[in-house]
Image (tube, rainbow, N blue to C red; front, top):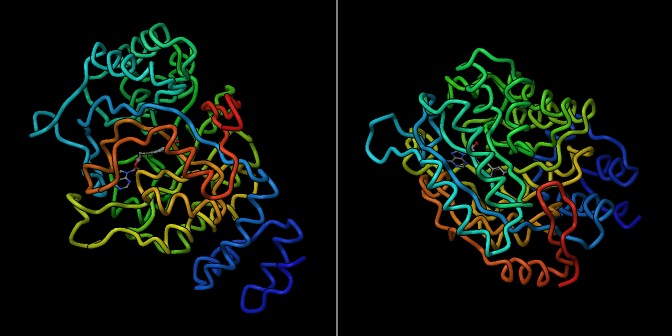
Length: 367
Ligand code: V47
């Protein structure tokens, strides 16, 4: 009821959120255009609290980027390299297994593996990767391969998306991460990632994963050439798919880092903390059918990630251990955050830390 006393331009949206009504495209645009960040955040916090109370999830995980060799070379990406180019690499399966084994004693429950579209890494490489990780790290969940990588394997082998996913699952893949979504608008894709699969195809891969019972995440790369309307359309496309499948677990907005990318001359600065908080909050409000909104501290920094816990976020990701994609593009954050540090950040925000696995099963609560 307290929210009803808020005055100003957003009053009708406040009433909708208090009543638990779905927000429209126009509401989303107005929220993004509003400079009343505290009201937007207050509303997102109200929704978060309804869904999760004081609990904030985190995960003990290890990211591995198997290769930076990529045939797409998107303009927003400083990580991708041409085959044979300076700094190009592809990890062997032994190296990947060793990296995962090294992290096992830290109590990881997830390995998160994404990389470039390497023309010579076939489905067999990935199937063996899954089998070896499954065997080497019993109980650890494998979240790997963006929709873009899954599509590339399907093209390489003239297979359907479903058959690729079924083969990978049989070998040990549990879940798809949310990368590669960028912004679905064809205009934006033409400007920043002309060779990448379309937004429709990205959604189709996730819909297929959901159909075979695989849970996935979703992202949006913001802070480059996209308009507010294109952001809202992206969120609504995700919301519509989620209405049909209920297969998404979390949404993670990704803050664009311009350094060393082909967009460096066009987008001269990274996102601001104000924008990061607004994107997280509006995402919470628009994605009413998503359980979790996740802050990836690697991209927005631990301080904004912590404050975002009062702006709609209920998941603080993660220990990570090693991150190459954002750090290639100038990220100044650390590579890893110790589990205790994450717990401290959450507690200092007045919340209850809950360790989860990839699928949001609770591992431990009450630290
Ligand atoms: O797909 C690439 C993005 C993604 C840049 O699913 C960039 O739980 C910022 O998807 N600046 C990979 N972002 C990371 C990702 C992710 C991260 C954390 C959790 C999850 C999850 C997924 O990073 C890429 C692309 O969209 N990216 N270049 C850049 N310069």
